[in-house]
Image: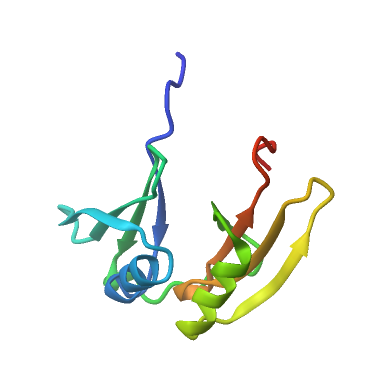
Length: 132
């Protein structure tokens, strides 16, 4: 067997509509599809610009609220300009929880929180810089 591609990553969320609004309004992601699974899970698939991988949000109200353990998981997105990103976040009332922090490779990053306590890292990288 050989894996050929990562298709999506699933994240369980408490309130799918609130989470969709965050990813649309704060990060500009696009909802590609919404459906209800045979077991009753509410699903939404979000597209990230310039990426083939989707983010699958899953809400299953019968299982209760989601509690994300601190430092367990985060999503990282590249941004063109971190200073512009900071101004955009501030205008939307989104609190920066860590950073901005410079790296030895001349990248800079910061963290914000998504609903349910998921961390989101926003990274500005100089052209031609390695992936991480």
